[in-house]
Amino acid sequence: MNTYTHLLPKAVIKYHYLTYLLLRKQMILRYRMSIGGFIWTLLNPLFSMIVLVGVFSTIFGQDIKTFAVFIFSGIIPWNFFSSSMGQSTSVLIDNEQLIKKIYIPKIIYIISLLLGMLLDAIIVFICFYSLLLFIGSGLSFSLLSLIPAYLALFFFIFGLSLILSVFTVYVRDLTHIVPVALQAGFFLSPVLFDQSRIDHPILTFIFNINPLSYYIDLFRSPILYGNISYLNTWIICIFLSTVSMVIGLLIFNKFNKKIIFRLN
Amino acid sequence: MSSIQIRSLRIPFRKYSNNSPTIKDLIVNPKLFLKEPDLFYAVNGVSLNINEGERVGIIGRNGSGKSTLLKAICSIYEEYEGKIKISGRIAPLLEVGAGFVPELTGLDNLYLNAGILGMSKMETKLIEEEIISFSGLSNYMNMPIKLYSTGMYMRLAFSIASAVKPDILIVDEIFAGGDFAFIKKARKRMSLLFKASKILLMVSHDMNLIKKFCNRVIVIDKGIIKYDGTPSDAIKYYLAH
Image 1 (cartoon, rainbow over the protein chains, first blue to last red):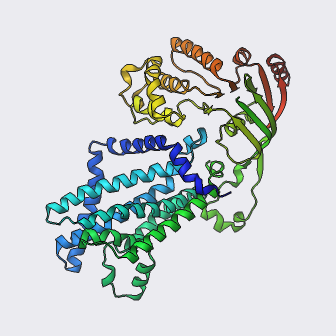
Image 2 (image 1 turned 90 degrees about the vertical axis):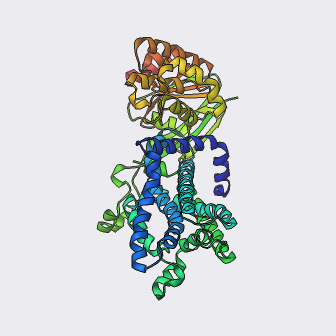
Image 3 (image 1 turned 180 degrees about the vertical axis):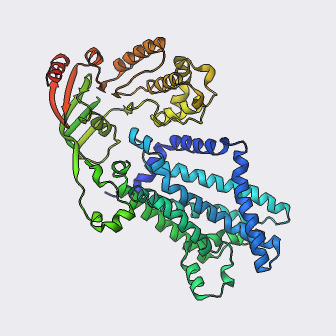
């Protein structure tokens, strides 16, 4: 029996309220702990963006305003991806005490974590975009395509998170490996560079096989150029998201019941 | 009809000596990767039928597999040899205060904890008042529980955990902390809860508690049922061995 096919909807329907409660807990903790809890979630990416824009617009000799929008359109999907990956490695281990005491489908922990990440990403997006509007960026209907773009990226991340969260229980070293890999990934994704302007066979090859390039394009096209990505890009992204989710669920389902014996 | 049926249940654990290897371990000794782990069975062949109306106490020494058995019944351990079949609504009452978050207020923790124990929003709303008044903490519900005293913390945790109304009640060494007045009040609430459940399954080292509430007692040792019978006979057997 393919339990994975109904594992997800069943858990989500039956435990939707608990998912909400866990999500709420996560949001309260993040935004209440320090005096400017909410402000910090905004200032963090803002500062890193200012540094990047300042340094790279000088190096590349580009107009600061356009470059700021360019970086912003890459940072938004990248931050969502990298913070989700970073947190996925520890999500099951952090909830170890609860997992050992009370039965809750483990996928609920991952879903609520990622919904929190998504919510964060959207809040940051809205605040930053308001800022961009202020310095003279336009609004266009193509921005609506960000809704399916967020969804596609969410499901891509979801699959990877399922895999990463389980594997970390088995190989704890991943908590240290993933951040390093993400640092490399940042430069191997077209966050800072325009993919089409890179004229280097190896880098071009890496950008082409890097799934994030396609997701970044879904964000960059509407934010920077005011148009919707090519149909091809959409098809590739939807395909990648589906593959990631199916493999993620398969792997998660395979290890789901064994995790508890490894949490010690 | 509520019932619990367990057929030749065995729950294997890896020995600590072959815990998850780190990459360093694997480089030093690549054979670890392929090595079949040494296992031990915390529950080693248990068959058990519990029917509606039975109040079953489980006694045994530390590490005899009592809690592991309860955890398997509550589906915390989902992988095992044998079969477990449960009919009726079961509530996890294994631990009081599981999932409490120190940073959250008493009220937030109430909702979160009730949710973890399987209650819906509506159900929680209905019993919220009762839980708060029973805990006697109505003036402290908007305060983060990290500021609570140990007694206050225990009182809130107990009040929530004992507000569930399952068909099958599973209890592992439940103690109510707090002052004398609260303990007295809590005992009364526990016995009401015990009486309301269709099946009670409790682990305890307190023989008086077992005698008071159970009509059937099982003695477990090394993951095997050694004795199954009336409370007085089982306790006699347990104390003699």
